[in-house]
Amino acid sequence: MAGLRGYVVKRLILAPVLLLVITMITYSSAALAVGDPATLIFGGAINPEMMRGQKDITAEDLMAMEAEYERLRDELGLNHPVWIQYLIWLAHLATGDFGRNWETNQPIVEEMLHLFPATLQLTTTALLFACSTGIIVGIISAVKHNQFTDRFLVFVTLTLYSTPGYWLAFILIQFIAIDLFPLHGGFITPGWRDNASPIGRLIIPGVAMGIASAGFYARITRSSMLEVIRQDYITTARSKGLAEKVVIYKHALKNALIPVVTIIGLDLAGLFGGAVIMETIFSWPGMGRYGYRALLTRNYPVIMGVVLFSSTLLILMNLVVDIAYAYLDPRIRYS
Image (cartoon, rainbow, N blue to C red; front, side, top):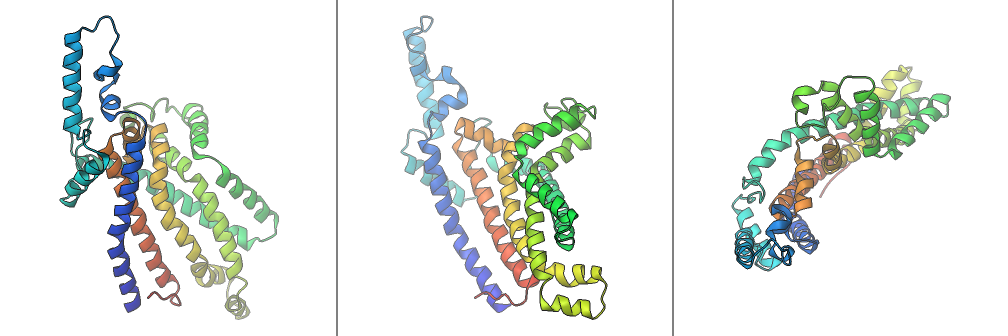
């Protein structure tokens, strides 16, 4: 365990350096995007360059617009070079200040803390669905290897893995939320939390978000299980007369889950990234839709806050996966 503790300490020391590189790349990429943030956030009419030549705009109005426009750019710090803007943001971040949302003028930390539980609820639902469905299907497929059940489940999992989540979301909305249940507009209007039943509010988005992961987990579990049940110690357990369920679930499953744990740990962070699409489709008030709107308006502080949060989550999940390895397989050692 001493080697594991040293490994964890090293990873935690390197994490800030990795986050710094990620934020540099993200900030530079956002700055190179087309469009002026002040114009996109406050509307084209605030940009005097877009108002020139219009007959109903006087010279005095244009001068007033130019003054207001420059004031807004100065207030947002957009008159500085990009690297100066980044250093200013970094200095505020060192004090725990993520900045303010340019649209709402509210602290970004408060907005993220308010929205994160909704995203956590959605991603947890998707992950639970994907894990429970994928692992069970993978085990059944491996136990029924080369039988009709196995071939059928392989076809189903491959189909699920290949199915775009956004396409499935619209299919589920049509056939379940519109045709089968009275959920009309329940999760596509601002009043979704009050009007939608639990099926429309959480289950449908969660299934649509986790369906591809379920197919992938099933295929990984099947492959890993097939490899494990061919090992000598499994043959020995069967020769002792142990029940097949005991052999599969007590002796084989733990080792077979090692590669699955890797995928689950990394996929959890990926689900947070994929929440952008699902939260936008279902008008889910979470971090994904929050970041999506920030991208549309080039709201630098919000973009950086969401990226920093997602990157930190990914790094921590990688670390958790490595620690889980050591507990699932004592033969694994870190130095």
